[in-house]
View 1 (cartoon, one colour):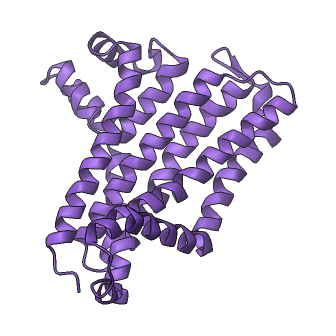
View 2 (cartoon, rainbow, N blue to C red; view 1 turned 30 degrees about the vertical axis):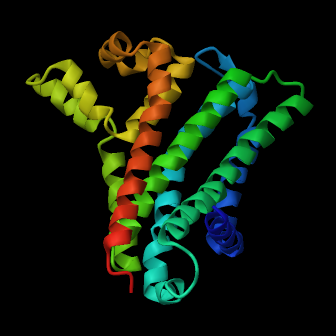
Length: 275
């Protein structure tokens, strides 16, 4: 455990010095500042006003930005160290491969999740100062949803990084994964439903295999319990999960998916040719 946390600490220090982390922090801090600046807390949509409206918009923007940031920066982790010849020094140090790999994951997770959470926390503090009502239940669930999203795509990033032999290949694969998930957001569900050749339960199941779809639907379910905007698909989801069940599924499934991807990445990394 000592080796793991030392590796995590080293990754955190390196990330804090990197330019991408400064841009990453500025983006999410800037989103919250911009939403307050444009008076989003004073607008009303579907009966939501104040900080609830801001959090809904923030989570929607984060679902588009966070995955690509996490993937692109994470895939450089193993692939970049491989190209830089770090593994040759690693093998000569008293650090196990497991401690190094999982330490990198722990350190990177803290680095990518902290700015996103602090931006939300800043929004809450500003709301308290301005005497705006804070929806604590929504804040807590959205925080857990962002934590699950970060874990999911961090696992994907480490898997890609372990498989790819060069940094360029890793970055290309990461962008392709993000683009594929983004393009299939709702499109596959709508296409199958239009054809009418597959049962609705199967169509919805295929759509919910996409973690981005799960995040988007969960964000909607919190302020639209009947999922009216999803049309007939809402009946399939609510009949099989229920609102509370689906909110729990939206946290558990992406987290387990990311953990499985990270575990597979570790097996490939451990059995591969490190140098």
